[in-house]
Length: 456
Image 1 (tube, rainbow, N blue to C red):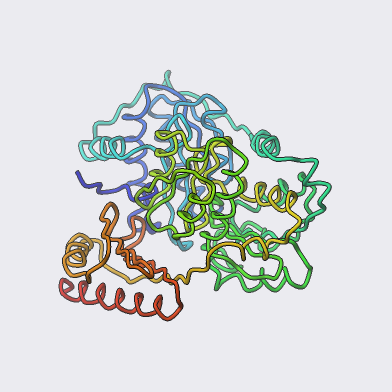
Image 2: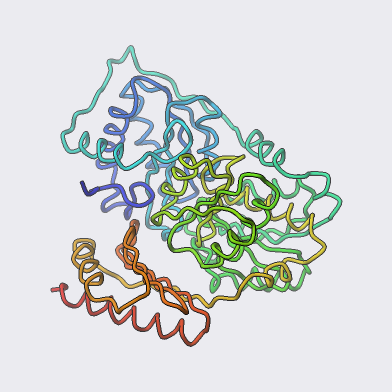
């Protein structure tokens, strides 16, 4: 069955349109009625202007269902995911739209293990919503709201997983671009406790995200680059709105796509451990395979989406997962992507190396990447995708576990519909810049032709 409301990462939409109080109230009642039997729910929210509204509606719906609510405040998504098992709760709700523009907001439903619920549970919730099969209790059975701050415990967990003494002796410095999001509440504190000198940028919470926008793409991080070079920092880090991702810059100010930093984490972590099992989506670079072959490990591929990586890590007992968008999953901490844990691990890698970050990243094979997107109405995505699959050029190998991925001797192309926005995403990688440009232009032309065929 196809999901109607849930996307790749929860339920999202423009606040005031799809995401309105009536919809949120009914959907929250559906989640509570299906997921819980008068249990405990932990809730947190990002810094968006609409988050207090959505959060209040969700809390009211859960209280009406006889659920005890623990409010951990304005927090990053990974902190909420840490809090659910830490507090021995039955589930969690995170109010966030992650990297989407400020007019968006959304709801992520977290299972008792701290990982987002799987597709079968999402479908059951949607069925409960459609049937309005809600469970409410009488006034005497309403539970309380408890406010708990677990940020210290969360930070302590991460500090305990790295070599604190070695990092402090190294006397590193870092530029932290919080993007006016909730990562600003944790990453600067975490790094300072590790002994890293922090230069903060866009670390004032602002739900309109005026500093450089929500998504930490390289073209928006020019100020972070400038400050890094001017201050002589060892590295820089930028988060998205809910800080489950981290994009790094090196000591020369160069901003790197997530593939480069994930490859560094992959090599470092797998070399240090007997467990050399790694999970990554099909959108990731070929460098992931290069590293696995170098360290003698095993790689598992998934569809695009953090829930698929998290669940595969549990299923295959993997120590590490990584996404090309800068999402790092570190098993000893939690099998979800965590931008703060990525910051701590980067500090540990640099503390253990005599080389600077720019030199470490030069050691990986050089591939040329292109990323683009094209708007596409939601109701056309399925037909457009089918047309693309039937009209792609000949390739050495074709994989269709998520969109369509074409492998050539000198590169690859991935075309897939976004699960969170009304767009198609195109990823290209090749051994030369010219070939990457050619593959991207061909792919864009194919997607435009497919959309034009069905668009009225």
